[in-house]
Image (tube, rainbow, N blue to C red; front, side):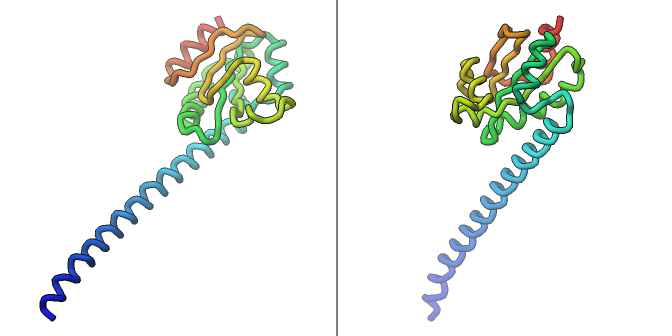
Length: 165
């Protein structure tokens, strides 16, 4: 009986260590999902409650072009983690720009594979946008800049300042 006890200790300790690792993994990934959902909620609320960030709609986009506003189109997707952080950076700096000079639209890139009657899919196709986290700066119908680089708040400030001058 004395020889059996030590042989049971090792599997029990191994099972306990494995259980601790499993619990740690579940906690880590659970926290990551909660943080991602929080970021998405913050940015989606910013888009719907802040007049500077608008969810894309054809009428608003066409009106901004007719008014001669500088336009920033940000192509985003729910499954894009960088997009969530970029929307937060954009929401932070968007309040600095005059609403009568700049129109900022969040365009749902996930709809790009939808039917050709979908305005977001048509816009992505017309502008040759191939990935989320794409920024397109326009003045009227003219594309000034298109970028898939990560932009800091300072970068947004510089690009918009150059566009509205």
